[in-house]
Length: 248
Length: 248
DNA sequence: GGAATACTTTATGTATACATTATATCCCAC
DNA sequence: GTGGGATATAATGTATACATAAAGTATTCC
Picture (cartoon, chains in turn purple, green, cyan, yellow):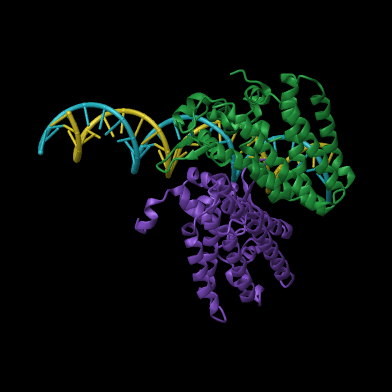
């Protein structure tokens, strides 16, 4: 079989995990719908053993839910679940920001974050924001959050933030929807940038409490924006995808 | 084979998971030590497939770490890791307490918590505290924390707290060590009880900010106590076990 | 006609065989 | 004597076969 070189090295388990995740977040499987191993085998093309491993990991990731009698189903999220997840993540990131400030990070450590913010600035300058620019923004924004978490130098916290982010960032699709749901998307992005810069400043000046407060406020605002966006839409099924933009 | 009835119904995967967890937290395997599937098969008596599932789940639980080239090793924790985990849990529980207060729980919902606290009162009244009473305390204390988390009515938060608690509460052994490490254990237990009562009161009176602040302070104090206890001991290998008492 | 039971089909849990990769040891060459 | 390479061994990744349990359907009896 002719496979792309990049795909040859990864394990079947990972390949199955990626394929199934994409299937779930793209809406190929509805929330609450059961997914059998045989189905997964047919979709992914790998055998049952790696498929099972992938299913277990997706369960841990929060996309699937174990059925007591056996097997898995696609997890369903309420609007409240998503909003709580965003606030949860904000709380965790607030702690990370405080740790970073208290633990004393050097200006050099903050360089990657600042560079990330500068790149985002370049993107949001254009108006209106193109689809490509928006995708880049999402990637850069995620990068900023990862960098911030790592700045805490706390493996347990980093791990937890990573898990808490799985849900809001689950979907690589759904950008269009998220974007169209927020006519004033650009304005929101600019405010988010502002928050990020303040956080970096607070960390640099060793103001732990302020850094923490800003990140929490940032998340609360994101949750509020999502709530507003949802008022204009009724596609609650695709909430994981929607939650993405509000995770700014 | 003659097996106890209770064990007959659980899956081989769960059985293997329990056996391996016990092996790890009891110190049968040293932190950093690699655990091969064959080893696990010999220890648990089940075949490789369920053993592998158990290993994956234990990795998610935080007790094992995946080795890039394949396989798993027992995760090693630094003192800082444990202290951070305690503060992390406190932060999450603070959020849970605030949610509970803001979301408006009835007095009836708080009944189980109060009853739990009353039972603990009965235990810590005796002096000195017996080994059995201490074990009961640990179980009741864990119950209180679970009940508090559930009071938030937020599945994502409950899930996250559950995961954050896995490490501090990992060990069912190690009680003796934890107790002996803290000569003034009873005093600490009493202070913890005080905190818990204040939290319940704050939730009942809808004081979200206060409820959150207390839980965070509670965790910080627990971390401080653990730090003090560690000054008298050098068994950093058994940190997961030790962290237990400080999670009060 | 409806409900209960039995049977069939399907799915998951488990075990094991096979293949591939990593690692360790040993030998040979420098 | 040391370093590198090759071979052998062991461990993980993968696939599949088998068994058991669950679920759905059909048939029969009330």
